[in-house]
Each structure stands twice: as structure tokens, then as C-alpha cells.
Image (tube, helix red, strand yellow):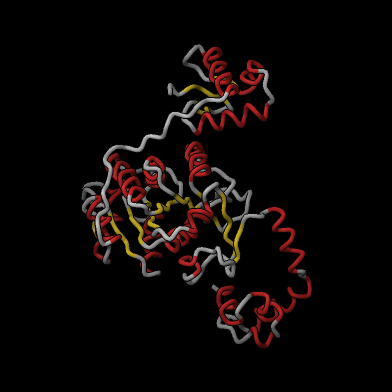
Length: 355
């Protein structure tokens, strides 16, 4: 990446910006035409003003030279020059020396692959590893949920800004990760989903991790792009064995011919990753039942009364019934959704989940 070459050549980007055009031309990839464009841009741009405005809109980010920038990610050939972050535990997780392992795969997995993605996320978290994925539907979501159910640390690398929820079906998962994990992205706040952004996102997943697990992926899958990046960066690649008659597994299985390791169970995987097998608790993690606040109890009672126990209820009807401020009701509904008590339906409607 050109910015990284400039940074490495001059020591920092401030020195690169102030360097003579002739000196910039000594950097690989910068020819006479690009030198002219840089000289023209320098006359028009005030970098400090531009950066200050950017920081007002996006205060939570790191530049390449920031000591908090993930060191493994900085090593890859094209790290994001700006890395945006979010989530309540992101700084704590990245300060920990624990290894990071990615679990990725198809958005339309078989029941077998989704179950194993969950099991592997759970086992890695129990062993103290950080689980990284892309918060996509299917395999990604199962891996994140398995890690969270084990009480572990998980990071979601997004193809949108860290404040955007995509896909919408993972809205409850987004709030769970926000509370107990973290988000990373190369896109500033407010940037929505675009198909072109996700393949680039996959290099960040591979760059952050010591190893990448492909749970299930057909040919032409984004997960195979992550595996390719991982191999280029010198990371280990692991593949969940799949059925030869399952077209969704064939892309992942093809990686075995390229040197990927087959996963033969949780304990065997941990032995390969850590050199030993830590004790695993087969009992699923169960968080203590949260104590509901008075507003939360009122909201649940209102939904119950208005819905007759089965139908969803409009947000405005809930607000009128509980006589609370609209912002308070919205905040409490988010918490109730996070705890699994309610589920949002299309049209800004809510229903109880039966918890």
C-alpha cells in the first residue's frame, strides 16, 4: 500500500507530507504523474484542519503510528491507514496478550457447519482466545454467539461504519457485541453496506489473527478471500471437514490441497493452536438472570397487555401505555432486546420472546 510505503520511507506521514517532491518520487510506486498530483493537492489542502474536522465526526480511531493500533494488523502489506473502533470492551480486549483466531464461512450454512462454528467459538473462548469474525449472517454470527455464550471476548470486523448494523437480522447480536466485545472497521461512521467493501474487509480479519478457521464455504465465497489473505500473511488456515455432496463445503475443502489443516475436534484444534489442550467445560455458559428495572417491567407488561400475548405491538402504543419519555422507552427496549426479552419486528413493532 502506498501510504505504508511512504510511512516506512520517511518514518511518519507528517515528514512525508513536508518532504520535497523529488524525495517523494524516490518511493516505489510514485512516478512523475503522481508527483505532480501530490504537488497540486498540497497547495489546496490544509491537513490539520481536515484532520480536526474528521476527528469531530469520528473521535474513536487510530492512525498507523498510534501505539494502540493492533500490531499484527500493522504488519500486513496494506493495513488501513485509519482504523475505527467501537464497543465497550474493545480497548481492554486489544490490550490483552491472548491470541486471536478468526472463524468465517458462508452466510447460508448447513446445520452441521453452523453448529460447529458455534462449538468452536465456544471452545476457543473457554481456552482464553479472542474470536474474530465479520458479524455476517450464518457462520460469522454462530461463531460470535458461541464465544459470547462462553463468556469470552469477541471482535467483529465490519464492512460498514462501526455505528451501522448489517445485516439487520443480527441487530440483537450487534448490541451483545457492543456490550461485551468490540468492533473494528476501516470505514468512518455513517458508511452503510456496499458489496465492494466486504472483500477488502476480509484482509483485516486475516491480518488481526494468528489463525483463520473456514467453517464452510462454497467456491467464490468471501471466506475463501479471507483464507487467501491469511496464507499471504503467513497465518495458519484451518478447515472444518465437510460432506463431499454438500456444494457449500467444496470451496473450504479445496483449501486442504493448498496446505490448510483439517479440524478433527475442539481439543485437537486447541492442541494445534496452543501446543496443549486446556480443560474444557462441556456445560454451556449461562449468564445470571438480570434484574429488570421498573421501566423495563412496565414496558414488558405493556407489550403483554397490548398484544394479547401473541401479536407484536407498535412502538408508539408502548410509549402511550407506559407514559415514559420516548428516548427512555427506546433505550430500555434495546436493553430488553439485548437480554432476550423482546424482539423487534418490521414496522418498528415489538413482541415478547417468551423469556
